Image (cartoon, rainbow, N blue to C red; front, side, top):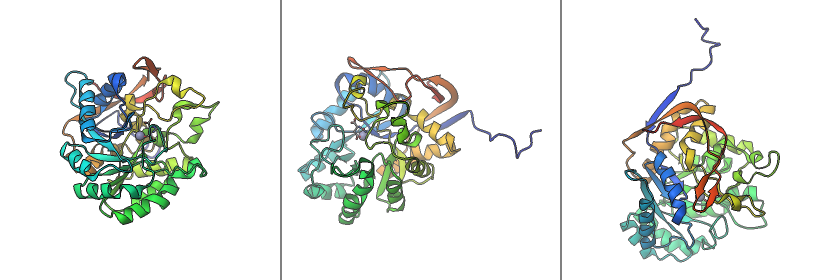
Length: 355
Ligand code: NCD
Ligand code: ZN
């Protein structure tokens, strides 16, 4: 008999959980949907679809038409529900919120102007959008926040913490019951802010911010496929995110921020920001949770906390992950271009069981 004190910790070889949802996803449009929509539908029952198309999705009508294009790109028989969002601008009319709510649009995305990919039409001063935020608070529609200030004189790595102090705290004071999600939180300051905030505040966490720190961008040379915004941070921040995601708190839930760009536009003198993770999202989260012995917390984070915050029922079907090595493809097509997924050519230890 093995001595219990020295025996290796038992790790399960499979894990069954309520089918997860992705609360932050970029599907893009047109031919890209032929890759991104099936990947999302293979993993998730629902996804909050980001509106930063060119031009951005700013009306209920555009959101409904975009939803139809996504549905047409799904494989036959796929049960996947895109949850649509609008892109907040300085002057989005409050009446549009009423129309959007009636059309099933679930949330609005705040991009500070210039903060990230396709954000030039974003908000220049949040106070200009206050009438729209009033309408959202009334309708119970969450504001999804890209939480970085855009002042070019500030250090890129400090922009999330500064956003909290300068923008989020005053915003919360002015809208005490507006649901706010700090999307892709990347810092200890962000994780602690959300942990200690009231029930109207939550955060999504990406798999890459759980798995990597900023060293990943520079090991052996510059590695553009690890470049996203908000950028990867120091190890101390990664550890705070892992603690938050595995804490069992309903404030933190899965949002991949899977953001496809053609490989040649990332491997470029001015490379685009965004990591593609939708091909193996739940497997990457399983890896992160497994590393700290917290697989039992994955279902809460991936499948239960998000719907609870959004006021939606959890899914009823389940998925199973098996501990099984597999190699991530080197690339996928993205229209006419190539898409390099995160962990391309690498071996992952968990695999979703496809039936
Ligand atoms: C996103 C994209 O490419 O649309 N990029 C990214 O680095 N995350 C935009 C965003 O979510 O910031
Ligand atoms: Zn995003």
